[in-house]
Length: 362
Image (cartoon, rainbow, N blue to C red; front, side):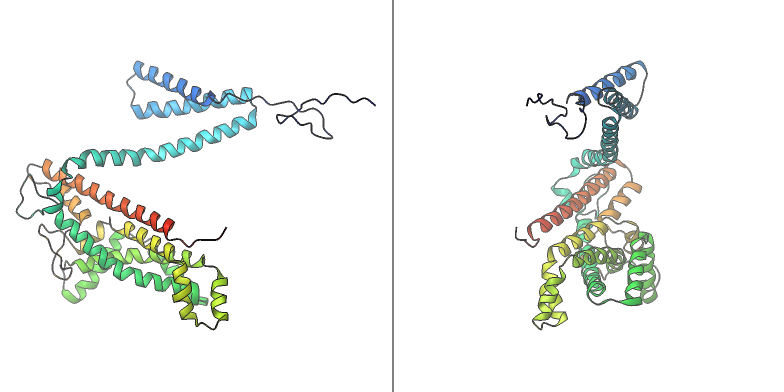
């Protein structure tokens, strides 16, 4: 018995059993996408030379033209399915690039405008007695650290205990009510939190009160729901087997939470708290209402006004004085310092999550 030679019908070289021959699909070369967009960029630049067009419109036109060109080539060579896949990929990358444009432009502008005043004087001097050139934001940096520290002391215990109750103890209508209130607090505008804290302290100390502790209370109202939500999700990730093993040994529930659940979730809890601090440290509206501004250094949150970096930048930009350029430079530098602090907190959260997460056997 003679056998006919095997014919390669698929890209892998195998013949599908029970089916007819499969035609091997054609593919565009790897450089086709880069060539399509390079050609689109050249066309956009030529059109820009002919007509005075903004660079942003040229970039959008180049992306759109490159996407259409690549889709047309892929549809002609590879077929409609692979062409649709390439089109979707181009749209995803385009959306990502469009989202990065404001972020990158913001960072570049803040660094360009704020870096010249990022010197030792800015970190070691206040604005007391400074008119025009010179001065710094030492008092605002210290005020931000003091108020943020007080906010953390107020919000973290309340948020963690609320999350523990919702995960470990809460049932029925009370749990649903607390969850609903936390969701409502998450969407509260920051100015409303500032008005609440101001009204609370005005009841006891009279109208016109400005205190650092009032600003801490306002920021705590914004920080508590963030801590509750992040801690709740982290506590839910703790395996129930750990709790059941502790209960089987006769360990009380409160001791199981303290000795088993919280240590297991410690990395996630610390990450959530760090991100919550980064969320509120740049708030301006509640501090404008409750704390105000001061040119001198004040470390006592229970005595008078305090300066904070967001409010400092706001006043330096809106009330620069004469000549205005020195105050505007200080405002940009304060914004840069605030961004660096927030970035540092986010990096710290990443490191905590990576190095202190519980190890699992593999």
